[in-house]
Image 1 (tube, rainbow, N blue to C red):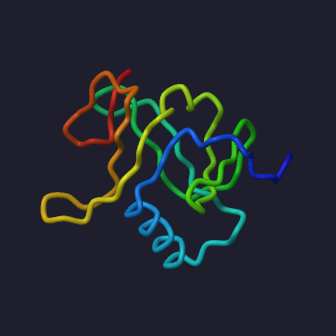
Image 2: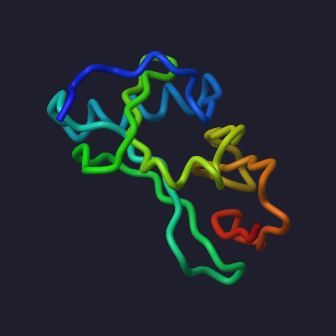
Length: 117
């Protein structure tokens, strides 16, 4: 299993606010360097698929990217659903948390974490 970071352009992008929050969470949890941010999808939610975002170990079938200094793990099959997606972090009066702007989503639900293609 290769530990080299792939040089391909990452399938997702992060806003400056998202990057700051990711590093803040990583520092607060005192995570070790072999963990990366897993970005993916899973079945479920009111629109059919949910986004996955959390720190995790690299697994078989994962691609590894370095995006804005963030080590990202994504299963190869998930790129089809997530290519071109922008991840942001909102910290306002109406909402607080990560948001997903996915050009591949045919529809989304009100929660913002569930979508269909």
